[in-house]
Amino acid sequence: MYIPQHFAETRTEVMHGLLRQYPLGTLVTLEDGSLNANHMPFELDAEVAPLGVLRAHMPRANPAWRSAAAGGEVLVIFHGPQAYVTPSWYATKQESGRVVPTWNFMVVHAYGPLQVVDDPLRLRAHLERLTAQMESGREHPWRVADAPEDYIGKLAQALVGIEIPIARLQGKWKLSQNQPAENREGVERGLRSVGTDNARAVADALAARRFDY
Image 1 (tube, rainbow, N blue to C red):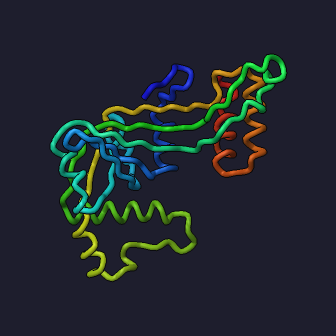
Image 2: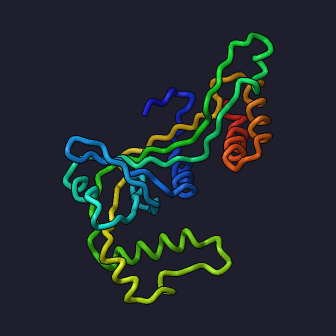
Image 3: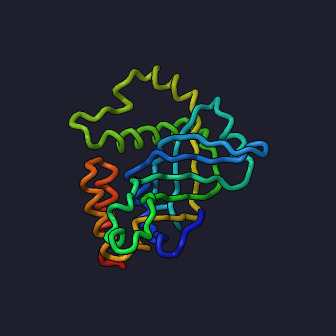
């Protein structure tokens, strides 16, 4: 990923935070000379040194796990909030007109080898943890044990677990850092006026970095 220095996010804990908040990742693998992409929620275990490990599951019928486990590196892409930025929000538009549209976003790339977890007990534990994570904000969280055991067992047989020890993490936080302060302030106000969750999240991220410039 191309990352100009002013857009680089290098803090592991910040990148881990995005992974937890936006756990749907795009797993990119190389299969027979062609790129393949699959989308799935990931569980992050940050306690595994040095950068953590990603855990997920996929249908056993999906050939991606077989080809990826044969060797080489895989990539998982996690997208955070993103929003269009109009030049109309820049103060310098009135001064020179030398402004163009852009897009602000936050994204993390995680690289590492893919390892297959073909163990029913470990797979079950992963499914229970991932479900608990996703259900944690609900008043009455659903649990894997709420479904009939034979039903869950049959479904689990059709799944395979994967683990990706993270070898490299790259973060790109494109938040108008290349603009003067008056333009950044205009972008923040403009994003808040849009009113969408994505725009508000980008505005909050921009505001949080106000003193980093």
